[in-house]
Every structure is written in structure tokens, then in C-alpha cells.
Image 1: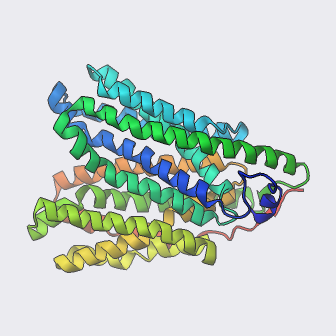
Image 2: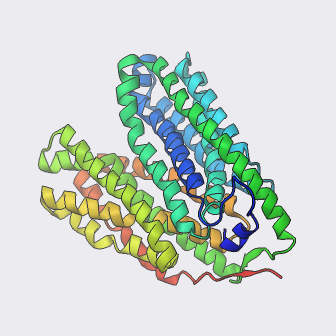
Image 3: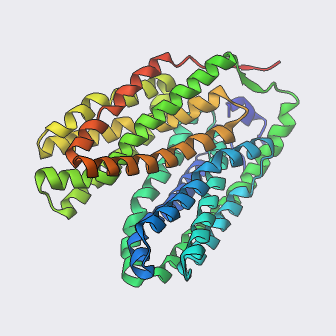
Length: 407
């Protein structure tokens, strides 16, 4: 939202001019809680398999249902929200997650577990598109920074979720999942407060729209489609590579250098921490130097480091992984905001598509590289995956986005 729009919001104690950092950090915290809950589910698989005697096929079906409800539904939810914004839908979505957690904690069998993870997935599908819209509304024009603050919360949640599962659920069993309901309740409370702010903004914007032209993109429809296709390929290269790192980097270090499991986990944490810092850094750079250039640098700029990674000693490998995480992470916020600039009237749908792709491609990439590792070796998988950032070269074909006003 531009500062001109915020000028329309003067005179109300809950609305501020410029970037609404309180709202942005609240959304980042809620994103942390949401993605923390989401990341607990895969961490539970060994426990569920042992407790219920599930086959790997049944575990795969649980993953499929969870991925479908948490990713495939997002564009449809976002498209509906674009046409019919619902300020309190964020809190309602978190209530779905709350119900799913409680159901999962006391599920007696396979079908009830499927229903539980579906509810949790639906909560995520409702959360991400509308939350991205709120982040842009609170940005004060600094869209990349706002998206980065929001996204880094999700990165943090994904990192600490498995750790909390190991500390809380594994020692005490399935029923301990219910403790995570406290996180969902806290997020729901915070999102209710955000919903109140969101409703005030919508009222002011609705009144202002009669006096202001709606933002649009001047690019031809064919160019917009081409640009969106390039961005999808960028997401593919980024999240296929990231899936390899998050799922198999520890195995690579253990296999090649003989490090302990604990040491490999610390190395993975270093990569994930750099990934979180890079996400936030990309927001600053995107607003200052242009999102197209951040996308190009983030994907293609990481290629020299990724290509060297499989051929170095242990210290060099860790160093390259940290630099890679720092650089490649800066792309996602820029990609999402660039895409919404292409379709400024479809913020929810575009955010839903790209968050859905993020989840979906991450899952597919992990499965693909696991299959490839079984056929070949972990070292071969890393040699293959490190070429993926070279796909970033096609970002040079992204057009410059110059928003205008529809008359």
C-alpha cells in the first residue's frame, strides 16, 4: 500500500501511516506458529508407524492428503478472497488447525488421522493467501520487506517444529500433540486482532476507491503469462534444490566426511539459519534495487557456490552451504511480490499459487531425490541438484513491471 493510501487512514488510533510494523511482526509470529504446527506432522511419522503398524504406503497417503489440502487449495482460497475479502478468515483458518491438532492427538486409526491432517492442511490453505494480502496492506509500499518479515517467520517455524516434536511428542506419545493446540489458540487470538485492523483498512480502502483508480499492470497479457511462467521455473529450481539440502544434507555429510549425526544436524541448522537471514535480506534489497535483479542474483548468483559444494573439504562444504542459503533464500519474497505486481487485483490467488508451489515442489523434490539416491548415491544426488540454480539465468527475460492506474 502506498503512503497516499495511508493518508486516507488518518484519524483512527488503530491505523498508522507508512509501514505498519506491529501488524507485520504479528503476521510473522503467526506464520511461525502456523508453519511450526505444519512441520510437526512429518516429524510424527515414525511414532505413528510404530504405534499403528502403518505401511510406508499409508504414510505416503497421509502425506498426500496433507500436501493436497495445504497446497492445492491455496489458489482457490486466494481467488475467492480476492473477490470477497474476509478479515476474520485468518482466525477461522487457525480454528481448523486447532481442531485438526486435537483430533490428531486422540485419533484411534488411519481414517481419523487422514481427517485430522486434512483439517490442519485446510487451516494452512486459508492462512497463507490472506496473510500475504495483509502483509502487503501493512507494507506502506515496502512490499518486499513486508513479505520477507512474514516469510522469515514461516522459516523459523519450519525449523523449530521438528525440534519441539522431538522434545514434546516423542517422549510422551501421540496425546502430547494436544500441547501444540496452545500455539494454535495463541495464533487465533493474534489473528483476531489482526482481523479487526484488516476490517478497518478494507472500509477505508472501499471509501477511497471511488476517488482513486485501481492499480493495474500495463504489460500485454502474453508478457504477463511468460513472466509468471519464468517465476514458476524459479520456484522449481529454488525449492527442488532446497528440498535436497533440507532432506539429505545431513546424510551427505555423514556419508562423505563421517561426521556424527549431532554434528550434521548443527551443520543443517547453520544452513537453515542462513536461509532465514537471506529471506529478510532479500526484502530490503528488493525494495531498494528492484525485485527482478534480486531474483536474478538470488538464483543465478548462488550457482558458483552450489556447484563447488560437492567437491570441497568439510570446512569448505559448510561455508558454501551457508553462503548458498544466504543468497538463494532472498528470492522467494521478491518472486511473490513481483508476481502480485503482475496481477495486482489477484494478490490472494497469486500468493496461494506460489505458496502452494513452494509446499508441493518441496515434497516432490524430496521424494525424487530420495528415489534417485536409492538408485545411485547421496553424493551423486548432490552433484545433480547443485546445477539447478543455473536455471536462474532465464530471469534476465523478466520484464520491468511498471504499475499504472486503470482509467
